[in-house]
Structure formats: structure tokens, C-alpha cells
Length: 89
Ligand SMILES: [Zn+2]
Image 1 (cartoon, rainbow, N blue to C red):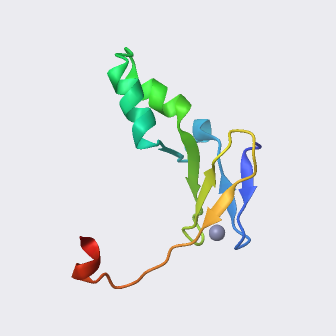
Image 2 (cartoon, rainbow, N blue to C red; image 1 turned 120 degrees about the horizontal axis):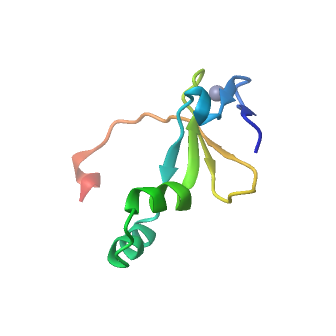
């Protein structure tokens, strides 16, 4: 992955964290539990390096997820809807 992603909106998403650009990690809960339960000394580092990379487009706020470390990104647009309390169960 280069240090720049072109979002589907046309915006540029810079990915070089050493230049101060933000990225996030997405960690599956059972993977987190496995790491925590294994007693690794530096859980934060394990989660950081083991999680999927996620970026956020500064133009449209889409999330850009790399499900596979060397694969192509998947784009997720914000979607707002009114939650119905009955759906929270
Ligand atoms: Zn965008």
C-alpha cells in the first residue's frame, strides 16, 4: 500500500502515520480474546500489528478498510437512520 489512497469520492486519504495521518485498527473480538488470554506482554502492540488497517476519508468520512493486509481496500459510506428501540434487543 502506498501512502495515498484515492477515495471513491475523489478525495485523497493520506496514510503515512509518521506524517501525522490517523489510522485505526479493527480487531475481531475472538482474536482480541485470544491475544489477551495468551498473556502477551504488549497487548496494545499485538492489536496494532494484528488488526486490520482502517482509514477515514477527510472529505466524505467514508471508512476505508483493508480486510487483507496486501489486498485492495473496501470503502464504507456513512449511513444515518433512526434507530427504533425495538431493534435494540
Ligand atoms: Zn471520500
